[in-house]
Image 1 (cartoon, one colour):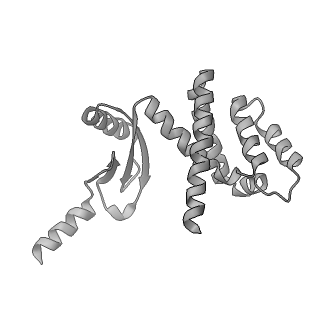
Image 2 (cartoon, one colour; image 1 turned 135 degrees about the vertical axis):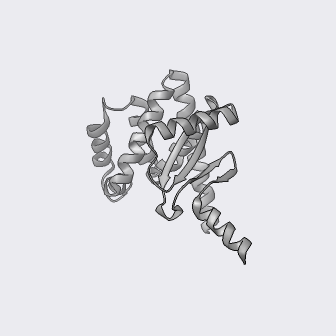
Image 3 (cartoon, helix red, strand yellow; image 1 turned 180 degrees about the vertical axis):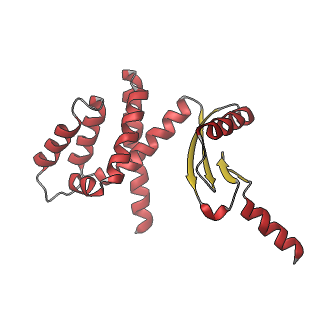
Length: 183
């Protein structure tokens, strides 16, 4: 049963995220919609009780839709506010992140953007991020979007995941390699 749920999530995310992408492309608002989705994802992630409220069927639909309109009308592109309302009406609010992820995939494909997940021992400075982005763009020939996170257990260095490849330049890995060579 769990597999069916995952499949349903993917199907809903794919269908609705793709539909929103096509609408935004047709309206010429791809960048605005992409930025709005990122903002909404952050808002819902930081306020899970709000996202739960929007997806709770026992709360009257009119109340939930009214809350969305009050919060977002005039602040987000109309199609994003309408999209959130549609998800609420259909009982799919819990799939918002899946829809946003599919939109992002389509957006990245449209603009030849590759996502690089970077894990470093400490927060990268703006100049370090730019230098890394430039280097990765040079290697791939694509625009790079960095998603950076910090893992102090790396001790130093960084790990980069890009286009299915893992580039591990962490000191932790180098220490492990030395230990294995000694043993």
